[in-house]
Image (tube, rainbow over all chains, first blue to last red; front, side, top):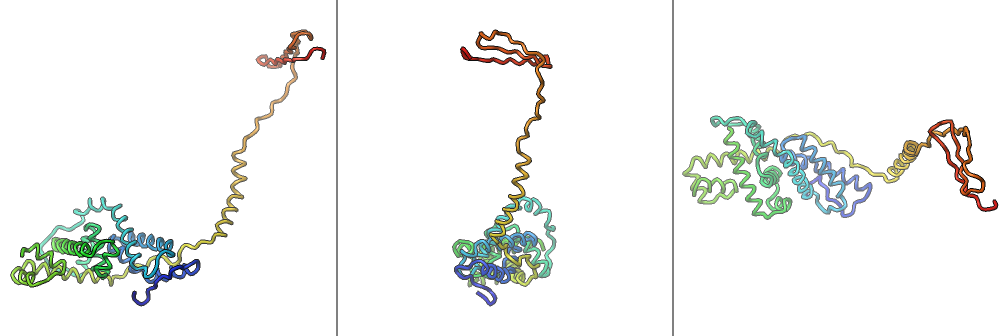
Length: 175
Length: 136
């Protein structure tokens, strides 16, 4: 747990709950919104997902013990996966039309690369997307990612490798 | 080692002697490694992005007594209104009319006694059957 983050007491109640909730939102808002944004690719969708995450947090304040960060990541990933599944068909239909035709290789700026990576993230399978977002963007350890996603560490390593490989090929094909 | 094997191990961060040897000989895999490194920098840079603040400042507060009071007010208004709207409407009173003619069709000794009353409406005739006991 880093400075500025709060661990929940075991049995928060009533008014104390409100204060704790507000502190948790302040401490983790950026983390939840940022993760949701990388997973969904649209800030409006990410805001909706983050609202849902914090609503569930408020309802479950009494049941969460210790550091709420893994719980928040887990719920964020689940909500974003549900959201992504609901709008997947329309995205796949437009996928080929939206991407520019591959041209001769050239150096791309950091911003261009980030935009390509966002597009690449959107077409990854959801488990690979979640693994690479938590591991490479959020900077969590393999063990933390495994705990959040409820899979073995070796599975996380496999998903992350596969995702990095696909992202590299995706970016290279569009330079 | 083949290029796909090398790429997979590079992506997994597993760089050993065999991978280094392959990289020394393969320009395509060196370019791929460069691509992976630049992607890693870009992914890391996502964390520095500014995001709009989330519009959550306060959780939904619950005051049970306020909910109960609000429910009571709603019921106090709604119940009389619903009762007025749904109560059965009594039929319009029918104006009583005096029979135009009364005809006794049986003698007092005959049981039952039938009284036929003609009303102003030719389609309406009232029959009155009276079953009286002997001697009454």
